[in-house]
Amino acid sequence: MERRKFLFLFIGSVACVCPIIFGCLFGIPKSNKVTAPENVIENSTNQPRAYSNLYFPVNRSDIPLTSYVSGNGTSFHDVVIIGAGLSGLSAALKLCQEMPDLDILLLEASNTPGGRIFSTQMRNNTSYIDVGARWLIGSDQNALQALANLAHVHRARERRVTRMEMLRSMFSLSLCSNTTSSESGLCTQSADEFDDVMLGGAHKIVEYLVTLLAETSCHVSIQFNSKVSNITTTDSIASVRTEDGRVYPASYIISSIPAGVLQESSVSFQPGLPHVIHQAIQNLHVIRTSVIHVALSESIPSMREPYYSVGVDQEGDKHLDVVNLMSFTGDNLLALYANHRLSIDLEKISDEDIMRMISNALQRAFGTAPSISNFLVSHWGLHPYVRGAYTTLSDCSTPQDRATLREPIGGRLVFTGEWVASVSPGTLTGAFLSGIESALRILEAFDDQTCTPAVENC
Image 1 (spheres, rainbow, N blue to C red):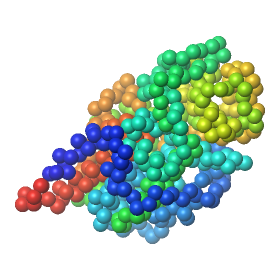
Image 2 (cartoon, one colour):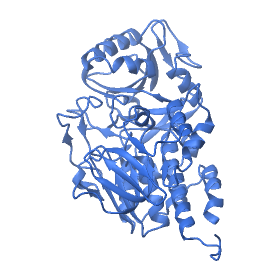
Image 3 (spheres, one colour):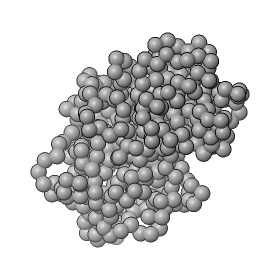
Image 4 (cartoon, rainbow, N blue to C red):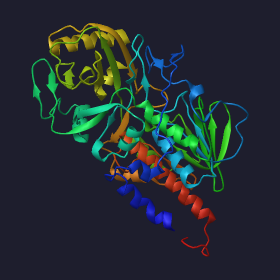
């Protein structure tokens, strides 16, 4: 079958340098215009601590395809996609462009699309900030680069933190690599390689994908506030049950539930996942990242570089990666990323204690007490629908584990997301391409249903 022959060749070659790479994947859209959300909705009182003193940037009534929980949820769909993050949206778009007569439902646990892409505003500050995904790793060959251009995402060149440097940093094997350091715990990264850093506009990528999806002829909708509790597969049908008891039957299911959530076993499977699949999920290492944005009433005179690492303990195994946003936007804003070990500690203390710790660390590093006028703390490890920022392989896992997790389960279920990506795992690009790969596997299954030996190319 032609699609089967193409599947693995496609994933291996899709990251080629091509000025129209997004058009190669999905077709050139009719319009490049994206309307930024005008309304800002204040954080509800029951919002989990994962988002502290936070404003939401998206008005759900302005999102195309939005559906609200109604009825008994028993209508049949060709494909149910769990999660409206980057991988879920790219999977839906690929399915719709290949088979425009499909009926597709996306079930999203939260009340906004995007998953770990999340732009917001601090109170009394008009600039958008990205509290989630910010970097386009390896931007010159990044499949999202063209999409970011079409979505008009403001970004700048940033010093690279390579995958190996990230691992050394997160696991505290070295505070800084190829840097100069001082007793203050301050390191300035070397400037030999670069990636793109998004400057408060990552949400535009999500808006753009949703807009493209709305322009297809598919019957597709996104249903928010729909947390999945059970996934059932049989030889002839699959179904998804949400916590409110609604059941959504479908021919196939694509699940982008993050690995951190699956590791908690908060979602049940019937029949249970094969042991090799369960073990491969448990073996993945989920990186917990706390992100702190700090608004300053005046800049720190000695902070002249765009990127720093600042130690917060004498041992040097807990530190903050600091992005000086003033270098890019002119705003007196700092974005601080706690490494894995430090994030675990920060999740256990109050925001006020976090700010005292940060203020002391910045004063030690730069010799000046920061004049903090506002702050925003977000803990991706505490977010109930995410439970971590991204995944890496642990000492107990191998790249083959990811390959195993990409294989269809029971002929009806396919996993997708940065944690199963065959290209650039643990990144935005990995999530994006993983969604496309999962869609191709579902399309292959549809071909198997319709093909007979008498049909050409089967």
